[in-house]
Image (cartoon, rainbow, N blue to C red; front, side, top):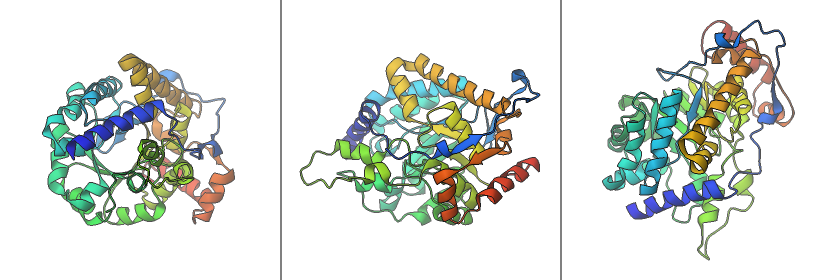
Length: 372
């Protein structure tokens, strides 16, 4: 099983970098506009991108979300990602640590990230299906200890597993998630993997004590499409239209998550490709934005320097957008005027969210200095 898991991780990286595995559905961020302030009364040197997140202070409101590890070929990728995160003072996560737990011989492919990023906010990673089968608090602690992590992401990837030829079919693990969150000693971030969190799921988790979420919405990498590209068996059941259309778009997932979990930490990820995307995600209600595939592509294309160039540009974009709204820090995007229209507004209203009230609540909460 460990060799199979390790090989699968390499397949995922290759397909994510080389193939068109993004959904044809969009993030719906195109239906958001942050209103430009032509008289900001702010100088660029006055804008600080420092952001508190899960008890840590980041240098910018950005996370390189978990992607890699578990195969010898991934060690250098994680090392580079760690170096980049350390240099920019942003958060960074490893991919699923199942391979490292099954085979101690590949633990180093995860551990190198912490070695390269001694002070960065580093996030460990385990999957819902493993918790549903046999993993528990013991494996969660091992994942955290493996990389001296500051938090643990528990990823929900039901669609991916159902369309992975050798995927799991067991997903009942809510009680274990809660037990881990209560006893682990570091924050637990419940995250999706490209199909987006929903209001109902977040409301349940929030009511039960979970306070950190990564929406990972539809509109970016489709892991159903990745698994379909891997499949070669004649009896494989292809996903068809599901590969492009299944899930909750990122912009809507951010709104639903913030509405359901007002005093939580939220990572807005899933198809975030530009600094403007990142700023829109934050303006909608996320604390920080998350990116995965474009960072991995930059690393594979040009190593550390290419990834640094890419992310420095993203960070500069975010900084200038904050200034062009008249703000001085990332939190000011929460109270910046935005317009929201078209399908995003319609879908949010269909989901029972009064968009105007939602936006007003966010602005008032930030003006009062409290979380949404």
